[in-house]
Length: 464
Image (cartoon, rainbow, N blue to C red):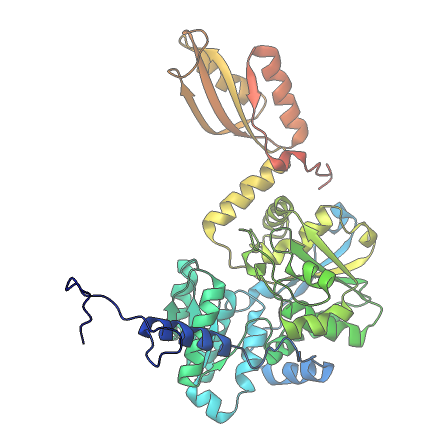
């Protein structure tokens, strides 16, 4: 029915207060609000968190042992350099490249026959999605994953290779989670949270059992924290077997959600900035994970992003391991000098994942090199007459400096028209070599400007 005003123009009928007529759009909005209120994960309830038990972890170890790789835990080549008897648990060697397979496998195994038939759903940026899709494929369980549009393309493709139903939707993880929960409600699917589903936490705890079996007389275990599932499981396993072992959690300064949860004594929302440790970027830690882990964590540290980049570089150069930022945070805290009490102690670091984007890896390596004085950027004004730039290049070559990038510009300099500004990015052996280069440039040229960055102020120990 058309509604016309006195001038014959069509208008919308808005119900007055107390009327029995309702605007359809208002009804839709109220219905959506009610739907949002119903989008709660029944396995992760803030007011009634589930505390995982040691028996849950041992049960998981028995039930997933045939489907999970018992990854090596080896002594690090960095031990003598950093003064720590360091062991690396290489869980990035799982098939999908992360520890997430442990929890995903156990969660799927523990489903009822009816749940297995209908299928499961989750929201993830990558590692949990990949693990769930892979083990769903191996166990014959239908899997749907909702990945936000910011998820790496390589991880989306990997999930689809396992025959999963991959939905790319949502601007961020919170939107993807709501989409997944709504679909779970509509389709009767079981929603499996990647860090707070009880069986997921129990499955992650099997990593702690393996650590205790592989390394004797452990003094401390340093664990990265995102949503809290890994440290909850590992701390539970290790503390039950060896109560005197120190459990230390590490977060990036860009996503300190567990740190804020401890201060508030409950999980609380934390604004997340872009971080090298994207696997740790969780705005609210898991309710079950926090309730389980918080009493067992002896120390929590927050590490700067630059140290994560340095840790990634050290693992590539010294251990020949490609590890993502989340997996390198434990080493980052040690290199940064935030865990001086571990000097001379036997320490285990779980290298939790190796799924790092290749472009991000390149940036991390460059930042790490810059922090050590092995990558320098400077601008120098040289003569624009024939041989001016060649002379600069010969001087760098004479002391063994490698030029990575060089460019020059004439039009924008305000000084002598017979001069040219040359911008150089070069690689040196170490900081002493870099100082030699600086001194030589200052002696030879009147105008030399070196690039500065946050990494230059880190004061990295010369022995590292």
